[in-house]
Length: 103
Picture 1 (cartoon, rainbow, N blue to C red):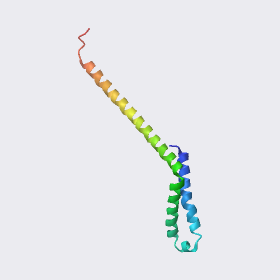
Picture 2: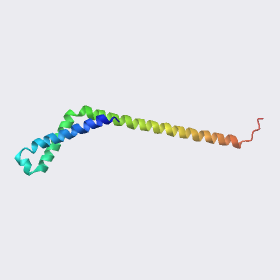
Picture 3: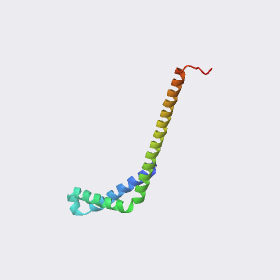
Picture 4: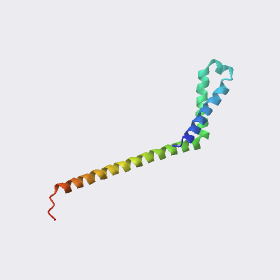
């Protein structure tokens, strides 16, 4: 995964929450009820991220999917190599046990 795309997405999501929170805390009613300002800021941040952060989210999820597929391919390759090695060992063991009558 490219760390840059995940970092950009994380920073943008934090800004989508912190900027509305700061603006809401300027109002007197939200100074008395800061938890309400946090709830509204979370809703605003969620809305903003759904509307404007689709491309960074797609990059992050695409990078995660590529990374997962690379791990699976490496695991499949390793499992196939181990299976082939076990088969070779079994064939070699049967050859060693047979008497050599062809000579």
